[in-house]
Length: 129
Image 1 (tube, helix red, strand yellow):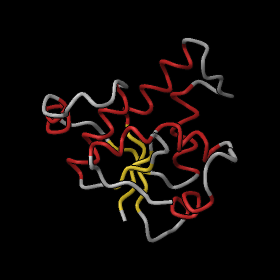
Image 2 (spheres, helix red, strand yellow):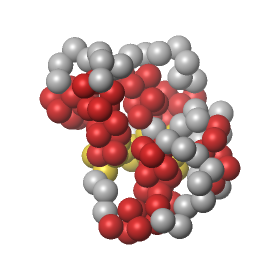
Image 3 (cartoon, one colour):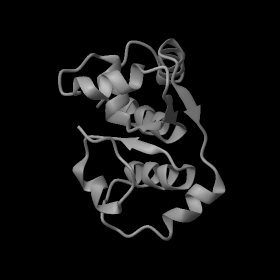
């Protein structure tokens, strides 16, 4: 399975946050799955870190790639097809980063791993837990 992690899922995974269900942890760790973190999430993390809303032990441009590699999570770039899909996406969710992740999941055929129930209204594939 091709899994695209929502930003909060990635951060919860790194911090062993109890809000993250064990079934999702297991799917992220499953070597049968290809797991991705979008550059969109890195963008979101950098902004929240700079605003003081997300403290990290190291600068995000160092910490996030380091943790991705440590957990064997691939980086997913943003391409024109994904950005173009944004113009066709209904305005059911206000979060710009989440909307872009939804577009990427649709375009790439990935399963979006999120706890954000507003995403379910788009019909994108998500993990069931």
